[in-house]
Image (cartoon, rainbow, N blue to C red; front, side, top):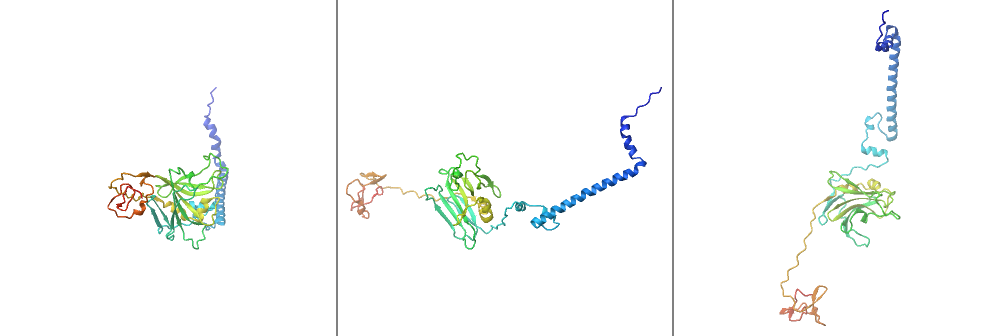
Length: 327
């Protein structure tokens, strides 16, 4: 007997496929081709319908122009419209005036219409820990704005070591002693990023602090808080940052223009050197040399142009005042 040759396994596997492509099965193959074509058209049709539905949805909601593909490309400002945020119009600050303060070494801008409305005030209240406030105020005529301007508050670092200790942060009643879990500030910068501020933006839901919004920066011996100023209404907001941005966009422009300059302070005049002879007999009272004699009234002879120098701090009619003495 001759051994039967075994067919390779691959021939067995591909045998049905070869039969499928026989001339006998051409009608079947055409059917499969048409099925694939129909499926492709069906998928493309669904995609077009879905795209048109999306376009029409945004046209109805936001008033986009019909058929505009650019309407689907959103900028950061346009994205805010979908979250309900109000995008303020750009403010032209090219004509703004610049205020420079050489004593504390800073400069800040304000609208050029705010003429002669810059004031300063030193701390007089018992609760005040600031050293000086510089107030920048709008004319306020016909604006109807809740905000009247902004303040630059100067705090000495020796007395006020951090933002939490300033007069612009207020703890809530019943706030926990440990406030580390409550967010207070975050570091931000504007423009070139050369100056970094601490942005304080506290909403009503904060467990530790009352709502607040301002920018703070520390340099050298001082903390500089730039705070928006509410007018006579004294209105308070649950979300101060959002409302300030919406109603008073000039504030943020002013903060972004804040810069440090060199501190220049006039040097105190040196006390003139006394060349006169020191008194030979006098007493010291409160660190000063005064007359030691009882019932002596040297003030009555203060204007006397005497012949010789007083050496007792007890001015007599024939003596002229000694610069070492206090009469």
